[in-house]
Length: 446
Image (cartoon, rainbow, N blue to C red; front, side, top):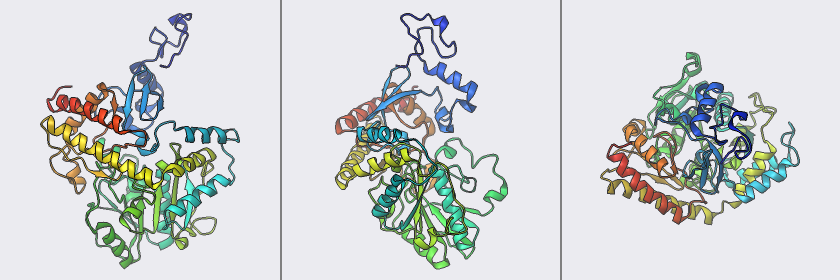
């Protein structure tokens, strides 16, 4: 529990009147009201505001393993795990030790470091398509740079993306996005000029589009993990590879979520498809902000300083993020991935059974270490199918799970991220709580 005063000796009147409840302890509602006065919407990422599920967000004070604690001291079994950035569990000792040790050497230099070189080498070793790797600061920066690189390398302008795929908050790719864009019920966003998306073509997921020689690249989430988890149909990814080859376009895999989640080689290793450019984030920073792109040498050498496509960043290859990523990836062995996949299957089966016992048939897709919750009877094959999920039911289930001490993402199109800290016993406990929550949610109670 966070205290903003000495509640024994310090009178409440001496405390910050906005934060203090009068007992010298923090309160989620008071924290949110204070944030509203300083931050647009009270949050620094739109979906955190609970707009689609209603209510007041909890404010996290600390985390360990599979759990987080809010400022009021309440523990939640956490299936958000920083939207997949955490795979070993919160505050894993090896990662914490690595960060603390690196921080003693300084937090940023604006110069090359051995750690960034090593992380690039590790990515190359695990993902053979990445002959060269460039580190940056986020998944959004990675997809933005990948698109710029594809246009610069091909001399073409048009980009093809898929409805429901979310590629971060870059203007050209916000059209018909999943994740928070879908949750907020908007097709894109205000503030993006028509010219920014004039060369972006949006097509249905799981259907191979017919391309022409104007297309610079096709960008795709190989598993649509921002639309409730939609696996690719058989031959879809291979069809994209063949169609890009036919017209000389580049194939970009957005592996910000699937990279090092579906296995050491990401989705491309899982499905045996070789993209021209890959985008990474989340896991490769061990929970710290980072991004990367990798790809064929002749394409990557178009980046400055070798080529004409500009990219730079003062914090790119940050020494804390790179050392945390190295510590995380070092622990992700084949045996660990096998165990993580088994736990994801256990969670998926348990959630499916919980809703069935509560009287609702839903689809709970599982792909390696990722688990989706599609609150509709049939499986989703594209974004239109995904939008059939019952968002009202999800909102009731979300709050019922919070009451049971389980944290889900506050949006019906996000996936669940069981990790190494989610033991079988913890997963079974989550399933028990999910059954009670499903009974409440299906019954229409809040």
